Amino acid sequence: MKSSFVIVATALSCACISAVGITFWSAPQQIARDAADPIVLGTIPDALATGRPVALSMYVHSASPPAIFSVSNFTLKTVCLVERGAALTSRSRDFFAPPDCDEVWPGLARASNWTQNEDGSVSISDANGATLLTLVRGRHFSYEASDAPGADLALLMLP
Image: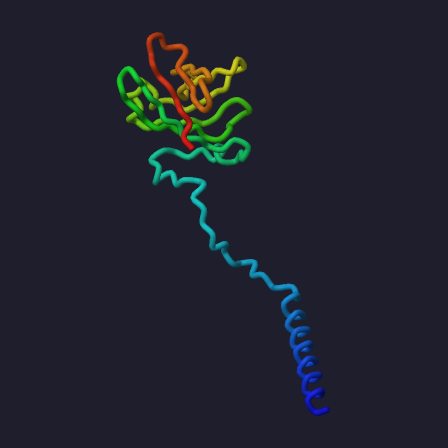
């Protein structure tokens, strides 16, 4: 009889402790409104770190994320990396090419706009709207130069 009482008392005390613990656990927690979010993301680059101005509108649209392309000039055997930014309008995106891209294609470092044309081609233009290069869709994730006669130029999207 004494051992049955000990077993029942132990079970009841465990149940009470569990009930108190669940009550405290399920109670609404006070969240500090003034606390800063400790997570820091590198999705918007610092203008000083990249050496170029950052257009905030480039990062506002989440429907078209930025993409990095390898630009290859097979005639000159030169390569550089360019960045197609997020959508600025329904057909236009920000575009950045570093200064070393002038060795791949003259004037490519001045490019600032990537525009998708209605016929499926892409125009890369400078800040004044002058077209520097026109590309057509190649196989898979690549583009090829179409307006430069004799140019063996290709852009390949990197993963």
